[in-house]
Length: 231
Image 1 (spheres, helix red, strand yellow):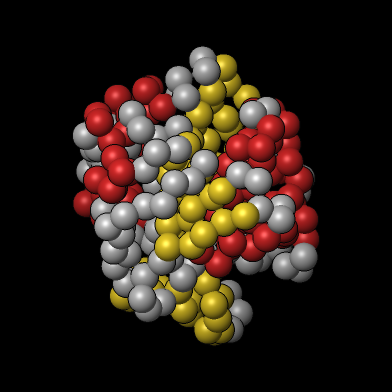
Image 2 (tube, rainbow, N blue to C red; image 1 turned 135 degrees about the horizontal axis):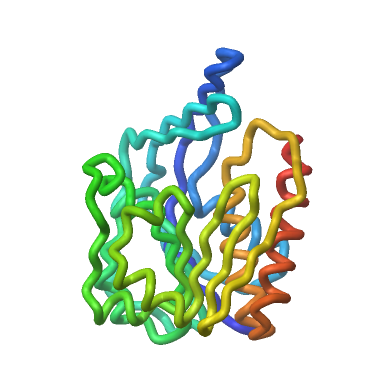
């Protein structure tokens, strides 16, 4: 069985529905949704995370999420055990991306946490070439795309580049080809975790099959089930 290492963060989410005024505190963070997805696939994984849960406030207005970080817990790693796939998905910059050089396997990065400050400052994310060339699978959202340096985007499209578009589905660039996957319409207020669930499902499925379209279709199907179970 293929071995997966997940580098990610758990959080305590304070969720505020601004339409209803309802406030809820519950478990969250990308590590929660990624591990749920991997368990659903019966995948063998190891988890590397911070010593404490991060704290996040999420406001939901008309189905749109706006998150604010209260605190984060650093993820400190000095040695990585061999793995076939490394999935890196953080809340902010609690994991130093220079550590990617020490990973020998397929590296999948969800850039969400590393874009946060750039969105606030209206600047672009730059990564050293020796780092971004190590990334095999790169995920972002269509909103985050404009905060990523053009060279990173174009280079990544030659490997695997996933752009999620919320309720509209997602795009996949791979090996000079472009695919679009439209999501089934699901009326639901809380879509928290959907992007993490899709990303983990795609990465783990692709690791086992090396089938781009099949892995994307499986990820789309599984995230739709995930959202339906949230209703």
